[in-house]
Image (cartoon, rainbow, N blue to C red):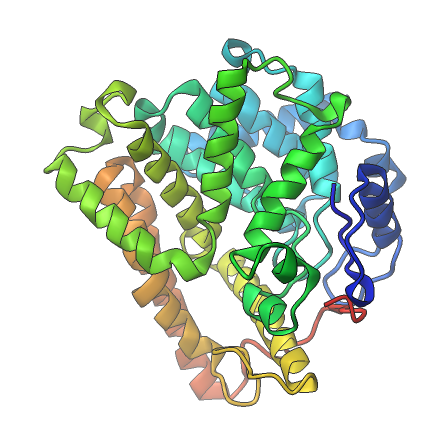
Length: 398
């Protein structure tokens, strides 16, 4: 795998052993604010794999997703979130049919979790949260009715790895500083390409190769789907996906997933559904309990403003919404819901009607922010302050 840290513009190390070693060192570094101080010895030994109580709790959580009962993954340990992710794979019931080795899948999940950085938002808790939303669309909203077992497995893996080794800044900063990732991927979705490459590098280790027994055709199809899903999470492609989704709805002419089977859709159409399902799940804070939604909003604003500070320090243009001195993050929540997240959620729900309960929750989230706005105006106490509960270390690695 590619080494996570890009120190002073040098090439990323390609050794899987080095990347795991790097993350082991990070886990021992004390963080401030809401970060965990370090992984426990329990988690480092991977005992979540054999702890019956943890596994049983995780299975109960996974079954709750059939009714859109989400877990606050921020409160879980790394190991608990690993067990939760594994439980979703077990609950969906495709592993035996696809000949997926469970022990290798567990090892893959464990290693993937270690390759997420301790940044405020794009961390392992976020990956787990996105995965549970994806699974709720698959199982709770019955999107699996139009997906093959390989589609389902590929979509869940895509969710697990979609932000692996994210360093808390976006593609714009990578491009503006000509980072190693920007150079490697020619300024094209450099983070998303890195997430994909890192995920498949993990699969090259025999003990973590969950797809070792796939046929050549199945592996190629799996790889195509994972790459498509992960690259689709680049927010720069949001308008493109809105257009493709609308064209797909017109092609269906009023039909929905409840009227169709996998055979009724072209491969590319199923892949579009998968990609949009991951996209909405990546921004699904708006359908979570409001207190959890607020916490995630604070975390993403922290990353935004920290990047804005870094852009100022480097005398670069400050990205839109990233300047703490001029932006109103509370106002930004309404714009995010009404003009970005809400429309694509509703567009997908038109095709997957089982998502109706999630659409109802969006209205509740808007009402919650309205109350926060009123309280903020009454007390003059900003809900998003202070803005720096985390230490985001750049180490000149850009």
